[in-house]
Length: 501
Image 1 (tube, rainbow, N blue to C red):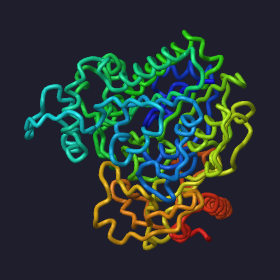
Image 2 (tube, rainbow, N blue to C red):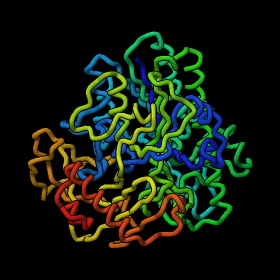
Image 3 (cartoon, rainbow, N blue to C red):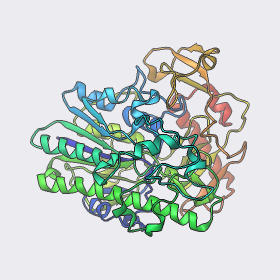
Image 4 (cartoon, one colour):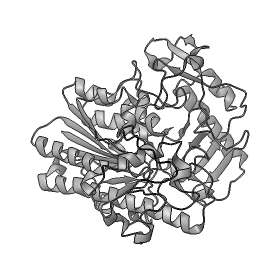
């Protein structure tokens, strides 16, 4: 048996033509015709690396930890495959894997490759002073809301240096990533027992794509317009909003094209007969909906947490069907292990999805999602409650043996009040560091204390009108408490969110 995962970053399910959206996605339509599409798939932990820890471990990250590496006590799905004679390969341009906060992920695979240059990847060392002027190939607008002002602090200059290496479509990191994945498939299609995770950073911002794809959504005058929105409220003109959205649409179209290359290869090599195909993302992205750009600074509305998921399972052969069961990102590791006939570790709380694929068998009644120290969302598929902190004076803590942030280690100052905690059910008897959390900076929530939001997703799928329903809220809070219990949540979590322990 063989398995391929094609994973995107910040891909919006509702914008795809396959789901009635405005972006033509003919290859996702091809995929849907040859797979099962999950209509109620949700994230677990946000953003990038917390989601990837869940992909490895099959359990939620955000109740105990913010952004960080795979821990020494974690069960890692790619490593379990490797230890059982199944070659696991990571082909990616997601540069967070080679920063401090992701430094233990790629080593869990049998082999891996990372293609450089996305976003603010510390790659090209060009010290040419720019001042307030822009280098050639500037990709920058005249707008006061544009690339320069917004992104100096987010690595804008580094990104400009990286873009100097992009001269044609073949130079884009995503294209190189798919080239590598397709080469692996071509070389190994005749062999058994391998898993390929073909993962791209796109369509994450900045929204850069070849001109041939921009041409379908933008006029040539807009090619060098803003492509890197800040995580902030919308205050641009309608013209600027539309242009930024079209930049994302063009990049999404480029993502669809790359998927088509994989589907073509599966057709060419007749891989459908024995190869599982999973296509997924880590989360969505706001493009002005609810008057927000980006992620992390606003409530976790559907555009961010309700994600696309497609799976082809050659054992059941079910295709061109949709599933209504409530599933989550933590289900992917158990699904892949089960496909290869491997036992799921007891600490993996996700569920194998074979029976959901086969006959839409339910695997859960509720699920929770969120950022560490941010509001906790819970849904039963028909209603969602975004639960704000009931008491912001209750401190949050990081529980870890790997004290790193996204691209730095914890400082000595942060570690001064560290204590040793006896650990949790999933740390396998290993004590862990308990560090007061600094989460709430970049991904601070604007959803204020006691400002719960609840929506009826059946009558109001765009979450425009919050509802008051005491009975439903009590039901969801009861289910939240049960999920805290199941995940062995720290004691302060119950108090912080006003959920009875």
